[in-house]
Image: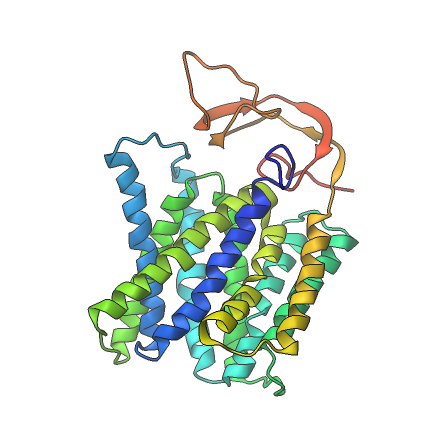
Length: 353
């Protein structure tokens, strides 16, 4: 069992939980796609996520729950705009353009580029720490995802492939830029992203001739979107806070395997050698990541910021009056030098030689 005192908690369970919910949304969406236009369904999923999270966001205030997350600040708005642009608008648009110009098999294979783009940008642009074990683990997880989505046909590189690659690059940028917002309230951010992306997709679907399905189907799609997109995105953002982008992205790449296993259960599909082999590869990758122990003496410079926290070894400030944990407020970190296992979280984004 993972103890809350280890460096694995709570980041790893959050990232894996995000993958489980998103992976489950694929076979559940498959139940709906025969009755709902695909583009319209994308809009319903995202809008369901945004509106569901809006109920959570405003509901907790109405019933008097204390808000333990930091609100969005004015300085966060440019980052939020880019996240919505790349992740909520350009990504889905490029994907739909790509799928309309290429085969489903090629599209499925190329979608694995999102994980590669996420990790590559994190390691090469944002300089997150990586070693051979992590590279091997990420490679095994991605190899399992590729194997799972390959149906024996050759990959077709055409105009549609370029659009799908652009969609994956957009989502890779989105995932890395979201890290800039990971100290703020993830429900609020995911709510805004869901409403904007859902509204955009619905508008485009109606422009291209889609018609609204029965209310029951809309409700089912909205529920799948709330859990598989909205709650999953909140957990993904919390994972970013504790693990950094590359590691969260690697765990999230397990989602296709989770979806494939659920498809076996829901649709009675055969448990093929392909699914088993992909599961073995992903299990190896998962083990390599869980076994990571990044432990060295490091220095924290003086830092001031706001986020949800408890009074641990990195938060030793005082309060005027009583307080409960967790809580959020603007606080200062004094310079500190120590050694312990850690990930590139909010407080460990130092450089490595």
